[in-house]
Amino acid sequence: MIKLPASQKGASAIVTMIILVVLGYGVYVGIQYAPLVIESKSIDSILNTMEDAQRTDRITSAVDAKTKLVNLLQINEMNDMMDSFTVKDRDGKVTIAFNYDRELNLVYKMHPMHYEKVLILK
Image 1 (cartoon, rainbow, N blue to C red):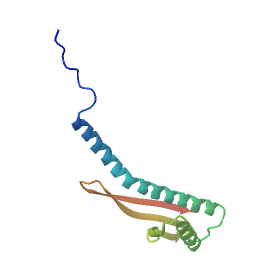
Image 2: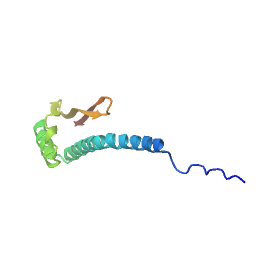
Image 3: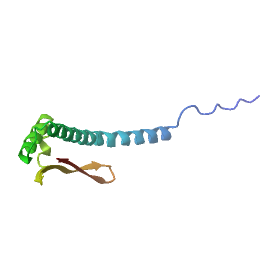
Image 4: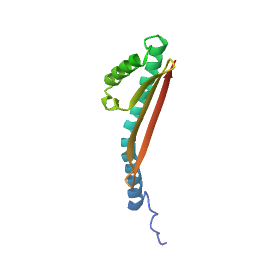
């Protein structure tokens, strides 16, 4: 009897390279995206802290809110966000708004990402 060659075991070099390229691209985008998510969650946490401080009557005006917000940004080492927020006092309500832009490099294009978060303290 004639023995036929055994069928290929494992992936070919081309398939392995394609898998590695796709995996590498995912890691590349993930490395850029993770800090953006952490920054966004930190701002959410700061706004929750501001809301809790308002409930305990530690924030009574826009000046108090701005002072507390600057302090929280410094504690979280987010000094680059100092120009990204506004605090306004209208009709007895303090409005805190974060508004900033970031870019995500997708190799084939730069993807702009706009973040906007608003908290109204009554």
